[in-house]
Length: 86
Image 1: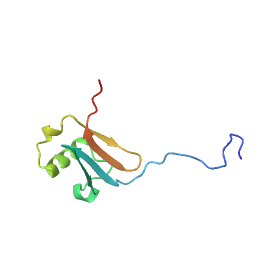
Image 2: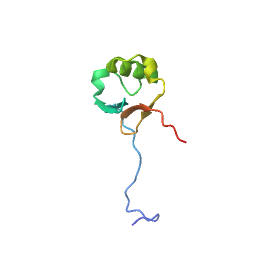
Image 3: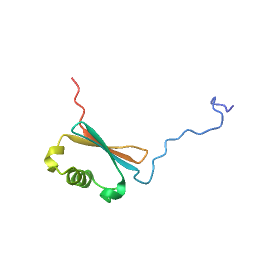
Image 4: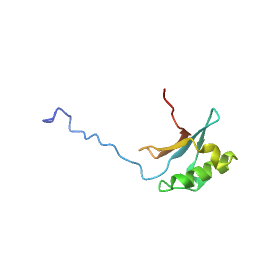
C-alpha cells in the first residue's frame, strides 16, 4: 500500500478522443445513433449536432430549442430536453 493509502493504482478520468454514440431523447423515445449516420466528430458544434438531429428526426430545428447537448467523457453525446426543476 502506498503512502496515501492507495495500492499503487492511479485513478484518472480519461476523455475518449472518438465519438462513440449519439443518445437522443425525443417525444418520450430514446434513440442510439452511430456517429457515421450523422458524419460528425467530437469537435462538431452544438449547432451542427442539432441540425443533424433535427434532420434525422424529420422535425424543424425549432422543435429542439429547449434541448441540451451533454458531451460525456466516454465519447457519448446525449441530446435531451432541458431539465426543469421546481
